Image (tube, rainbow, N blue to C red):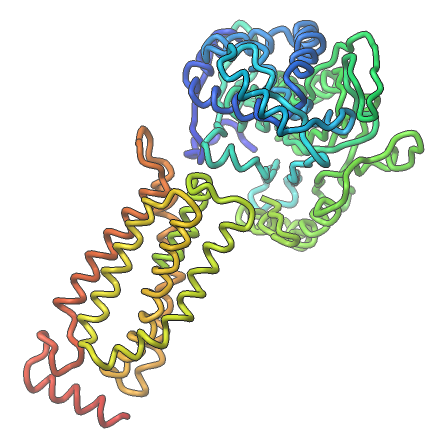
Length: 573
C-alpha cells in the first residue's frame, strides 16, 4: 500500500486531475463528459433509484445543504464536474449518492413500472433537465456483494500492509466502460495529500488510497435504522410530514477520510459525519493498522482484527457484537454469500498469513473463490465467445436471462448432432481438403457473428459453429494415426488437445489488448471475432493447399524417406 510506488498501468481509463477543487472537477467532467451522461441516463432508468421528484427533493433539501456545511470543497468539485460535463449539479450529486438513494426502496411504496414507462413515452419531448423517469428499485434491496480485507505487514512476504477489495460492480459499468482510475493532485495551497481512486465516472470516490498511506475500501450493509430524510409516503401508503434532515451521502465519507494525512484525524471526521443509511468503511494505514467502521445513521461500530490473526475482513452483513445484541434495530441483509465469504477467505490465507508468506498472487487466488456463484473479486470458436462476452457481447446482442446459457448450449447440441455424419464423410474426401474447408467455413462463421444482433441470429451462428467444429477432433485422430507410430500417438494427442487451454491463455491476453483499443467505432467483442475469424480462414486455406494427408504425399520428404516413414507407421499398427 505505497502510493508513491512506480506506476502500474490500470485496467480502467486513467484520468489525472489537479488544482483547486472546482478546477479538478471541471477537468474530470470535461474528460469524461460523454460517459458521465451515459451513467446519469442509466440511474434515471425506471427501477434503479426512487422516483425522480423524490430523488430531487432528497438531493436539494438534504444532500446539497449537508455537503455545503460539512464538505464545502467537495461541493466545489461536484460543481466543477457538472459544469465540465454540461450536466446539472443535482445529476452529479445523484451519481455520488446513488448508493444511499438505492437503499431507500424498502421504505417507499412500489410503483407500476409499466405506467412509468408509458408516462415517459407520453412526455418524450420533455426537457431533459425536468425528467420524472426515476423510480425506486423494485423487489428486495440488492446488496452489492463485495469483500474487503486488510493484511498487517507481518502476514505478507514483502512486509507491506495490503488493503484489498473485490468489487462486484453493476454490469453496465463494465460493459459500457464507466469505471475510471482517478488520479487527483490538490493545489499546494490546500495542504492535502494526492489521491488514487477507483470509482464510477462522475463520482468523487468508490475506493482508493492517498499519498499519506491511508486507504479505504467499502462494503454495503443494511439496517432498520436507515431512513428517508425528507417528507414522503411510505410503503404502507402513510404520508410522513417531517423537517428535512441535513445528511451526507455516506459515499462521501470515504472521500472525506482520504482528505487527511493523519489516521486519527480521518477517523474523527468520519465519525462526526451525519448519514441516513448504513455502510462499512474498511480503513487502514501503511503504518500497519486497519479496521472496519460499520457506520449506521445512529452509531458507528468498530470491527478489529484478532491480535493473533494479523488480518481483518468484511463482507455485506453487520459483524459488530454491539449491534447484533440490540433489540431495537436489526440487520436487513436477506442472506447469501456474505455469511460465508469471510470464512472462506480466511481459510484460504490463514496458513500463509501466520507464516508471513502472503503474496499478491495468493491473495488474488483467495479472492477468486466462486462458491455460491459469487467471486470474492473461462478454442477459437467457443473460446472466442467466452472471451468476447466480457467485452460487451451480451449487451450488444440483447441477451437477457438464460439467453447466453442457451447460446452456449446450442453449440454443444449441434456438436453432438453433426459429429457422426461429418466424421463418416472423412472416408469419401481428401483429409487436407476436407479439413481445410471445415476450418475455413468455421472462420467465416466467426466473422458472420458480427452481423448477429439478436438471440436468434447468434443462436443460428453458434449452431453452425458447433457442427463445423465437431469434425475437427476426429480428423486430428486420423491424422495422428497416419503419421505416428502407436507408441508416439499418445503424446501427439496430448499436444493436439493442449491447444484449447493454450488458446485460453493467449486469447485472454489478446482480449485484454483489444479491450484497451481507444477511439474505435467497432465494439471490442466484434474486433475479437474479426481477428480470430480472419486468422482461422487463412489457416484453413493453408491446410487445404499445403498439408499432406500422409507421409507418402509429404513434399518435405524424399522418396526414400516417405517409404521409410510409411513403413514404420504401418509396421507399428
